[in-house]
Image (cartoon, rainbow, N blue to C red; front, side, top):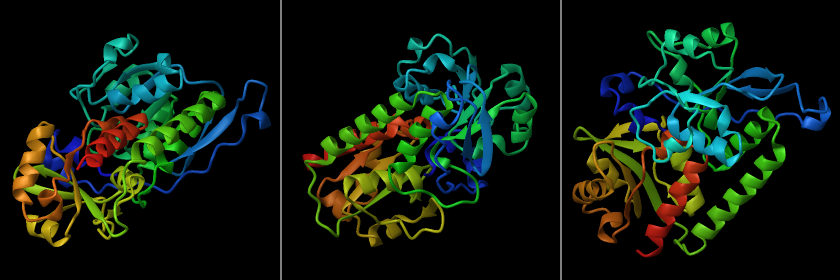
Length: 323
């Protein structure tokens, strides 16, 4: 999944210096029954490193505010103490009074991380612990705190392209918090929601789609991870699957040459209506524009990830079903 829509709103220059990718799926945690009566210790792998939990996390720092929704769906939101990327408005945060430790930074500083004293940093991008002035994995270890990167969104590794990336996260969190039954129920609920949302859709087998963002007069193709997973769930062929990276700057002509039947568009500078209007004008000769199949997607969902990705599928499917 591309984090372009998030990081461009911070600084375009810093985003373009990053090379983002998502890592391969980490092994499933061992069944809690193999451990003590309380399910601990349990070891979960994230971005190639094994992290052992002796108890459920109690001071969890989130890489973005919306991540709390997935913890809430698992019944463990009270463990979250705060988040980075506080400038991103997410509705409903007032329902979680424990979220008092916040930073507007995308990459939390070492000082902020140490002062927060988390026992888990629940990130949506390993890049949050890289870069000048950023806290590091070593800093987490010194606290000590564990790391879990949602979506296996790790550096220098291939992106996943199905919703298994969401379901795996929930199962891993179920092991970390020793709530496997809640995790299994939530996964089944999300799968049922996806099935219900996509049932009315009946695209032809060769229908192609692509996700783009338009920022500062430039067009970026979003080819990987959650974007690919959403297209897969909708029954569409990813027109940008052959890109070498999860996001790439491309020309409007390249989008037109892809002959996309559906275009998903997000722009950090526009609301849903504005994003669709801009894309419809720019790609007026694309089949997607000619048939009214340009749909705006909520960029905050791609920081929140988890259950928010299923929200995007439901909203997108509902719009496509009537076009």
